[in-house]
Image (cartoon, rainbow, N blue to C red; front, side):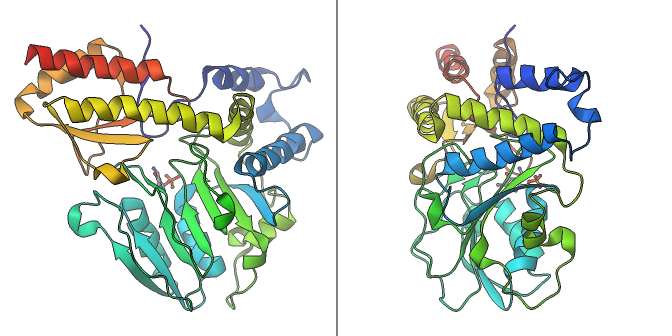
Length: 354
Ligand code: PMP
């Protein structure tokens, strides 16, 4: 039976990417060796790294605009620390829109003063605050474009008078934005890009080198840039697989094509959530995420029936995050529209049974 994979992350990857990645584990580039048993300094891997870095900038429309792409380790959580290490001198402003922003704030507070410019914590993070001010004398402004757990997504970004840093872990490469508005973007690979183990960082070089603290080499963006993203042994498999996904996106028409498909998928799921009286959406309508649709059953007595039906339809990974409960349909780039249709079919069938 076909499995419809709605997992929030690690999550669905394109079949052809999985196929090619698995072939490279057995033998890479017809060299008689696995990708996993050659030097990361060999031409074979250096080409992968360079291609992945170039593709990331190309897809984001940031080539030749003073940005560098890096593939680092430590997950997006490591970026909570690296951003502060590299950019925080006195004070920074953070928009608190969910658990991950909250964690980013907590980590940055180890270094210096952090001001929450706005927060939706009091409302269970079910909306994106708007109309806040970003003080000009702060070092940077940090936001999270998509809140994986609560299912909200920033549709508009502020005009920031200071460098704008954005955690795009759960919606990178899924929709068109003017990426040049951002000075630093980071995203863990394990949603729209590849396996866990690497994090894409895209940084505008001219914002670096301005803090007075000494930065340990491995946490210093300038060191990683100088070393071509090979300061130490990189996670070769995660980077190769990410490169394959970036090629897959490019071949399908780039971010524009991803956005079109994602809009369609989210329209299908949200119209069912809104029309079916058995379900209720969690996020404020204007702020609903195209990547993670969060919803609950109005009547808990139907839980067992619904979950049995889901299982029978081959739907996997639909449970909401443990902190929110309910359901979360994660619809990353590689999830086909057919999977969303299969879920919606089960939801409407439940209505006829109830
Ligand atoms: N930011 C966001 C928006 C996330 O969704 C996640 C993980 N789901 C993280 C940060 C943390 O990522 P990691 O596990 O790679 O540290």
